[in-house]
Length: 377
View (cartoon, one colour):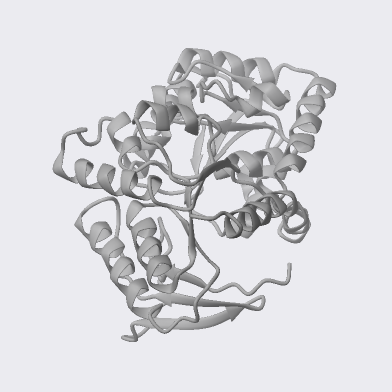
């Protein structure tokens, strides 16, 4: 839209061994579609252990170093997967006299606390909560990708200094439609005449994949139903072992450009997470949801929330979380629906996706930037 943008990214790709940095140089500069991008050299990691912590620190110190000579920007925009990204942006904004807009995509450490992965009083949790509070109380504006952010701020007794906004994740519909045509799925399970129940995304603890295996076990005599999973993660080997002998296909990780063609061949898409009060209170901002909606395929979700995009849009059904029996019964229900009813779910899904097209969301974001630039401290 005519603005000068520079991006500073970690060289690593999450849930992948790929690293943009191939040599010992501390950073790599490229231009993609006219946008200058600096990849900060970060070490590879697997899972959520020590190496991931060191990877985060690599980025934090690297981005501070490589932005020292940056021409003063109007806005520093930091999008979280972790709070140290915000902290680096706050430092960069202060030393350059810029406004800082902090976007929250993931709550660290609240997500891990809610899942029981770490205690609220754990030293690491306390540090991350302090960083979170520091940013929320000092940033010029906050953007949240989940609609229930106000209840979280109230619960944490945080009063932001700047204005707060809600913009969910979204989808580039033009690109999605082009990739659907350019990269049709040729995988054997996806081209059968069976009822194809598809899941795409990470296979980790937070995704609550055990319920899928349990549902597949309940449906093992339904030979016309196939479960097809695209993705990788810490739980994959264990899940594969449990799914032995069931109609479950683990297809592994694929390039993002192949996802539209995969979803186009599916009969039903699964949106699964662990059952937590956090999802109920805050709502959903899963990237895969918007790909699902764009595909025009019915969705079966077990994400129970007050802000239910699937249910409210009529794009599918939402059931009780982590209930394998209910999941199995509802899959059978969709399988037995006539094509007209299934098509209606798909049409409503695609219509809902239009509300989250990037062209629409980008205009919202630009309006926020313009507001922030004219707010006096």
